[in-house]
Every structure is written in C-alpha cells, then in structure tokens.
Length: 105
Image (cartoon, rainbow, N blue to C red; front, side):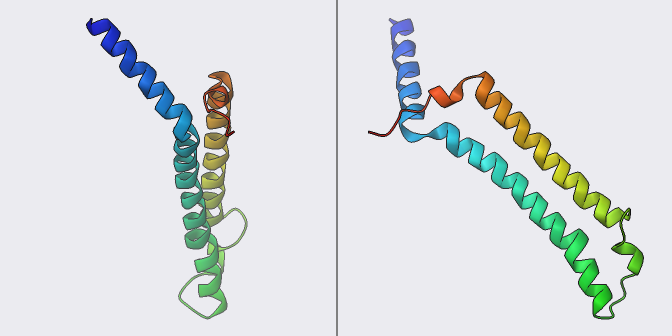
C-alpha cells in the first residue's frame, strides 16, 4: 500500500520534471550564477582599474598589466566558469538527462 503510494508519487515527480523542463531550468540557474561571477570579476578586476588609471585616479598601472593580480583573478574566475560548464555538460550527457525532457508536440 505505502510502496504503491510512493511509486505513484515518484512517477508524478518524474512527469513533472519532464513536462516542465526542470532540468534545463536548473542548468540555467547554475550557469547563470557562474556567468554573473565572470561579469562581476571582469568589471571589478579589469574595467574599474583601467578606468581609474585612464582618468587619473589613485590606481596604479601595475593593476592592469598582464600577470597582475587583477588579471589573474579574472582569468581564474573564467577558468572556474569553463570547468563548471564542462562538468555540468558531462553530467547532463552521462546521466542522459537530455532524454528526460518530453519533446514539445
């Protein structure tokens, strides 16, 4: 009795995931958060120091040269994004989650 109820709930959950595209939505949230980190890092570590230098702020030229901490932080954030994106893609393919979504008719 309880086992049948649980099985029915599980089937209902799978149908919900398939019909609503929950997997794609979850992947979008994960990658969206990673893109947000990349854009924030680009603005904070590359654009702001460059503008500060160009317009005579208190920034130093060393903040924007290749090999500086600011560029390194941005490249590390970019690398984190690519590692996360590849990991999500591989998990998606290995678990065959692309087969889970129902095709629109």
